[in-house]
Length: 187
Image 1 (spheres, rainbow, N blue to C red):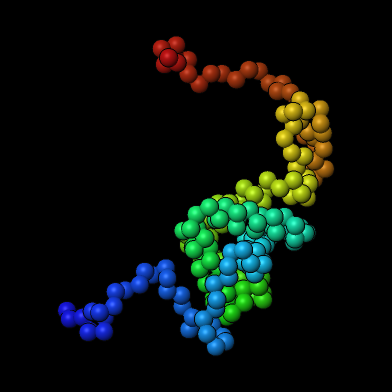
Image 2: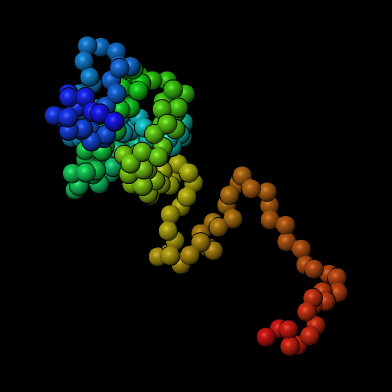
């Protein structure tokens, strides 16, 4: 197989550097948002709201989790680059603005990138940061750790009003026969 002369002189760029911009609207490729920018925070918060949809939750937990994701990426150039390119790819896939995409379109875009390195990195940080937020605990009805208060037993353990009352019955029939009766089979 012969290689065209144009390809011989220029080495191929790594695949992760190539961003598809043919579907993008506008005059040129989208600019990679710096991770310190408000735009990057807004994109991550929007991604989190779509990935972890709690319609009654305020923006605070999503914004704090976006900050945690950015902070986690700050220590690693590879993570920063993957995150920047991943955010850019979301904008490109959303025809220029992921923030403006409706919920169903945004969810479809995230399903398409669910296995991409940048999304896996976001998810690994976000699931812990989001559900470890005390405001989220309050919104979900979780009272938090109770070890330092002696456990849950005397702290409203049974105050879940959305569950039916516990049914406690004594077993009144004769004791059940053991399935194994041979003493040698038990050891």
